[in-house]
Structure formats: structure tokens, C-alpha cells
Length: 312
Image 1 (cartoon, rainbow, N blue to C red):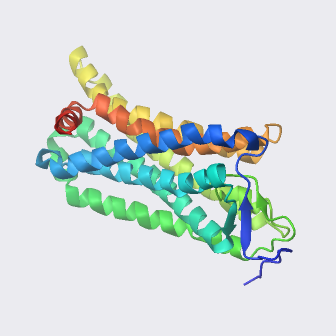
Image 2 (cartoon, rainbow, N blue to C red; image 1 turned 180 degrees about the vertical axis):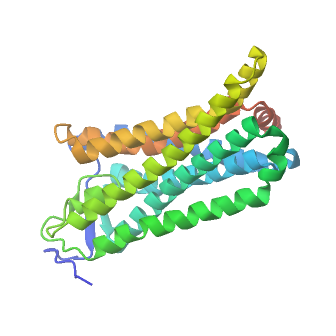
Image 3 (tube, rainbow, N blue to C red; image 1 turned 120 degrees about the horizontal axis):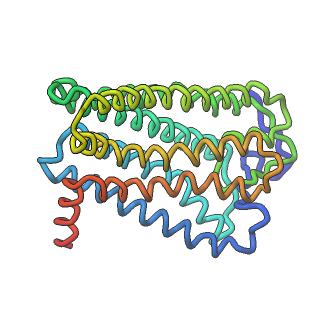
């Protein structure tokens, strides 16, 4: 295993620089960061609380909502505490092992999040195309198994990233121009050959996004075909309404993710602080919006949340 040849008194640390060019505004930037984080935690923990307490919500769709909420909590918690330490206390040091650990969990949970969205698309496909067999095809036990498969896939795909980085030499430059240890941000500061790391990172991004979006597209292709066969307009509206929340969540999740990933790799003309802000927003905004989307679009969940809110 290659050693880290850092020319400093503490050779086992990196420096997270926050948002380059906006250091003077870090305190102000921390306000929306912390607000997004708090709202995200409140919304997602409320979903977990309500579903766990209400026996009538112990169904596959709500089990998937709980999985989605857990991934949202995990994603935002991976980045916000350290970012706030940078903004508030200028605590920029992070150990190499801590950096690689943060990277692994962040990308692993994000990959798991994508797998949950695929499973939710399959859930909507069965609900619309096979409504009479829904209860037998999608049981809570089967949803749990699908979630476990998604978790194993995420671990196996993401684990090579920090392992490959661990082999790289890092010389005089140990400053990561970011608020968290994003894979490509760490790769760029290495003074070794990063070809394998770059190719693997890009390949994983394309495989995960490409495969998952293809599966989601196939599910919705079947849903649209089934809806077009229905003659009643009310039945059309009812069938499509069952998918509205999931479609909104996908747009909120995938669109900024793909845009941020592509601009970080190919957008050489875009200012560094724009890259960093986008990379943070795509991890912070969806966890805040998704509980709201499902709360608004899912009457049963909305009613239960309202009941618990009134008790508080």
C-alpha cells in the first residue's frame, strides 16, 4: 500500500477548503445549509415516526418511503456537520482515513438511494399494471429483500473507490477545494497516475445512472402503455396520480445529480464555487423536498402526519 507523501507536520491529514472564492461569505452560506439540513431531518424523521407507529401504513409503498427517508438522512448527515465545522469554526483538517470513510458512506448511500427509486418505480408498475396481484407480488418481505440487494450492490460498487485512492501518492498539495470528500475532488489533488480512478469513477456513475434510469424508463413505459389502454378519463387520471409523487422525486433527485456530475468532470469553464455549490445543493435539496412531495401527494400519509402534528 502506497504511503501518503505529504510535506507537512501532519502527513495523515487533508484540508477541506470549503467553497473557494466565497470564504468571506461562509457564515452566511451556513444559514441556508443548516436550515435545509434541519428541515430535511424533521421531514424524514416524521415519515419514519408516522409509518412506524401507524399499523395501517405497514405496506410496501410506505416501507419504501422509509428506506428513501433513511438514505436522505444518511446523505445529508455525511456532509453537513463537517461543512458547518468549516463555515463556523474554520475546522478544515480531516484525516485521510476520515476523508475516505466519508467518501465511501456518501457515495454508498447515494447509490442505495438510486436503488430505492428503481424499486419504487417497480412498485408503481405493479400497482398500475397488475393491481389484482399487487398484494402477492409485492410483500413487505420481498421489499426488504430488494432493499438488501440494493445495499449489497452499493457496497460492492463503491468500495473500490476509496481502496484505489488509498494506493495513490499525495504530494505537497493536500488542499481539497470542497466542503466534503467527493471522489473526483480527491483524485484531482493526487500527484500520481489517476487514470484508473477517473475511469472507474466515470464508469460507476454511468453504470448506476444508466442502468437505474433504464429500469425506471422500462417501468414507466409499461405504465404508459397500460394507461393508454384504459378508456375512462377518470381511470387515466387516477392511474397517473399514483405515479406523480415518484416522478417528482426522480426529477428532483436525478436532474441536479447528473448535471453536477457532468459539470464537475467536463465543465472546465465553470467557476469552482459554482461546482461546489451545485454539488452541495443536489445532496441537500432533494432530502428536504421529497418528504414534502410525498406528504402533499399521498393523502393517507398526509392525514397521519396531520394527526401526529396536532398532538404535538
